[in-house]
Structure formats: C-alpha cells, structure tokens
Amino acid sequence: MRKSSYLILLVIAASFWSCSSYYERNRQFQALIYQDKFAEASDLLAKSKKAKKKRNRVLYLLERGYALYRDGKYLESSKLFIEADYLIEDYKKQIGYEALSLFINPSVKPYKTEDFEQVMLNYINALNFLKLKDYESALVECRRINLKLIATAERYKEKPKYKEDAFAHLLMGSIYETTGDLNNAFIAYRNAYEVYKRDYVPFFEMPIPVQLKKDVYNMALANGFKSDIEYFEKEFGMTPKDIQKSESELIIFWNNGFSPYKEQFSIDFTILRSGNFITFVNPTLGYNFSFPASSVSQQDASNLSALRVVRIAFPRYVHRPLIYNRAEVSLSDKNYGFEMVENLDAIAFKSLNDRFGREMANALLRFAIKKATEMALRKENKDAAAILSIANAISEQADTRNWQTLPNTVSYTRIPLNIGENKIIFKAFKNGNQGSYSDTLQVTALKGRKYIRVVNTTK
Image (cartoon, one colour):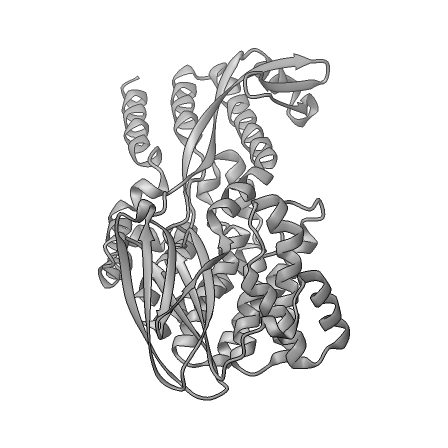
C-alpha cells in the first residue's frame, strides 16, 4: 500500500506539467517574440533540451527558424526550415507513433504539422532566399509548395474547405515575375484566382484581391495569350487602360499579428449500449458517435457499458486579436492600401473543424482502450488499477501543439517605383486609429525590374 501511494503521488506530480498547454509552456519564448527580441528568443530555444526532443523537434525548427529569420540570420534560418521540411516528410512514413498515441495521447508522437503550416514553412523560407538574393532557391521553395498542394488535393477526396492555398500560388506568381518568367507567373496568378474564387470566397468569406485580378490580366497581356485576354476582360470587366504601366514595381507583403494557438477543452459524454454498438452521446452539443462492440473484447464492451458519464479532452484554437487592422504605403505623395491574401486565423479554425469528427473518433477509441484495460486490471489488483486510473486521467490530454509564430493574416500591394532611389513609408493603424506603427523601405530600382519586400507587425 505504501508503495502504491508513493506511485500515485508521483503520477499526480507529473500531471502539473502534462496538463499545461504547449502555449503556456512556451510563454517566455512568446514574450520575447512579442517584444521583437528575436536573438534572445532563438538563444532560449537553442538552450532548451525539451524543445529539441524528437516529438517536438519539428516545432523547435519552425519556431527557431522564424526567430532567426526575423533576426536577419537568413542562411541559418533556411537550414532549420529545410531540416523541418525533411523531418515532416519522414514522420509521414512512420506508423509506430500512431499506435502508441492510441494508448496514451497524440502528444507522445512527433508533431504532425497542419497543411497550412507546411505551406507557410516554404513561404518564410522563400523570403529567406529572397533576402539572400538567391532567386533560384526561392523558386525551389515555390515548387515545393506546388507539390504539397497537389498531394493535399489528392489526399482529401472528400473536398474539405482547405485543400489548396491561394496565397501560395500568388506568392509563386510574384517570384516568377521578379525573375522574368512571365509564362509561369501567369499560370500561378491564374491558379491563385481560381482557388480564391472556388474556395476562399465561399468558405473563408475572403474577397478576391483586386490587385490579383490586375496581375492575372497583366500577365495575359504580357504573354500575348489572346484567348485568356478575352476571357479575363469579360470576367473582370477590364481593358488594357486599367493596368498602370511602370518601368519598375515593388510588391510588398505584410505579415500582421500572430495566428491562433491551441488550448484544451473537455466534453462530457454519456455511454449507451444499444445492440452491437457502444455509443458516446452529448445531446447538448449534438454529438453522437458509435462504434461496434466487436472493436473490443466482449468483457471490455461489458465494462464500458457499465460506465455512465465520461469526460474526453479535445484541442481547439484560441483567436489572438490583431493590434493593427489596416496599413498603407506611400511614395511620392501617393498612398497605396493593402488587400488581404491569406487569413491564417480563419484557415486554422476551418481546418480543425473539418477533421473534428476524426479527432473525436480517435479520442473516444483511445479512451475506450484505456478504460477497458483499467477495469480489467481492477478485478485483479485494486491498487494497480487505482494507479492506472490516475495515469489514464492525466494522460487524457489533447494535443495543443502548433506553430505559434505564424502571422494572423498576410496582405499585399503593388506600387510603381521611380528609377533610382525610392523611400517608401509603411504605416499600420490600430483599431479606431488610436495609434500607428511606421517603417521605412529603401529600394534602388532598375528599369524594367520587379522587387519584393516584406514588412512585419507583431506588437
């Protein structure tokens, strides 16, 4: 009994760590990022043994890669993102962790990135290469995005709300355009337009950026694609007069705020036995999930049927409000506004909602396996069963990990440049115009060249 009591105390002590969310365990890192102390944030992760463990390795690489990118260490950042990209592909091939997660919880396995996180990995790494003026490597990142989008579309045959990323196509078009590959730029812009129209407008309530329509039409004109020119003139109601021609242009992407983080919440279920099925029911929320009693042994099914109410943990996203709600840039006494091209906040919520049924099924199956084992043990050793019961309660945790330094939204604009030196003033405005943030972009423009710059607002 003394030994059993000691073990119970150890298990309870362990719960104080396991019950906290990933966001709560990384508050110090987040605080440094909020304060734009990116070098300190990177060093903090570099010294953390827990962050580097295999199950969190991908997140360590993504978070530290972001901190290094913001600190101007573009080559170092890129190396971490490339390693993360390879690890993600490697983890997809491993099935042992999937089986283990059924007996404990999803947090024991290496973190499986969301589809949009994989796209953003290549986005930020492309920005690294653009900073290094390595345009070919930036295009490689774009091609990797394209391959991921194709694989995502093939995997989700049931057509969820997020299976292609319109912004990724727009980014590809922008980089192709800066390298002079106008044919591929047109294809990418056209793909972006189609995804916005098909998915983003109905699912995320995002309007198609007017500037993108101009980009598609302009690239059709530049390539001399007559049938496409006629189609988009009719589609957009545009003529060549609507396209402002300039000898040099700047495309600016604005990364604003931070995407949502995950927290744990619990749902109470009543267990019902009906014929050959065991059903978990929550009438208030309208949840009703059944699985065959044959999924477990006859004795386990009987044990589960003896239970009445159980509580199961699930992950959910928490919105992080934006500090700035609009921005503009000015050059030569002219102002240019931004249009949103990616709403990661909306995509995150929709993506989790799309697969919530699958998350629920896995959580309920995990609970059934653990509870059946516990009840069977109780008949042989009550002390051991008590310890297992506490351990099961503690291990019944939702996976609250996610990449937490991604922007909340990405917007863009395109402005004509003067040949030679350009001083562009960027301003972001708080809600109600109660304050603003400003930055200066210096661009030395050559005739006929296109440029890309990025601004970030995090505080």
